[in-house]
Image 1 (cartoon, rainbow, N blue to C red):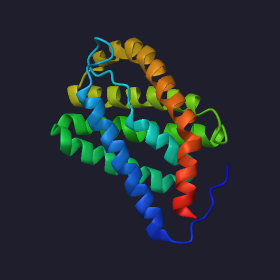
Image 2: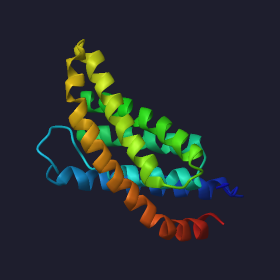
Image 3: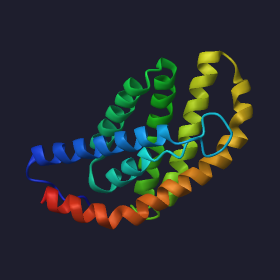
Image 4: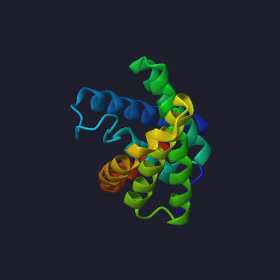
Length: 176
């Protein structure tokens, strides 16, 4: 799927800012919800719906900047330094994996791209934890994170896939 160039960069920046705000709102809303499963660190990743959708309409560099802004702003909201380190490691690794699969799958099957991104996010966070703790024992948590990553990735990917046509309509009006 080829991205249509936009004639006015201010409109493009405004659309990315709105998507960043939407992903922050989803992050804050999800933080207020109880954990979906009794395992620490497992979240639905609702903010990743916006990242998946942004991959459809914007360049990889723009999506990476949007994701980075969301990660750093959510780190400020949460107020935890270690949480920010884990989010950067997981989020950036997930972005590169999702970008690869988005390209490989030609923008189709967002749910598969999302599952791969969720698994990459978990792997990135475990790698960061192993480096910070100086121990590889954190990888014992991998089977649980693999299973929950598949389920949450499927959920967020299906949400993105179903909302794609509505966002497309809004963004194309905004960006044309």
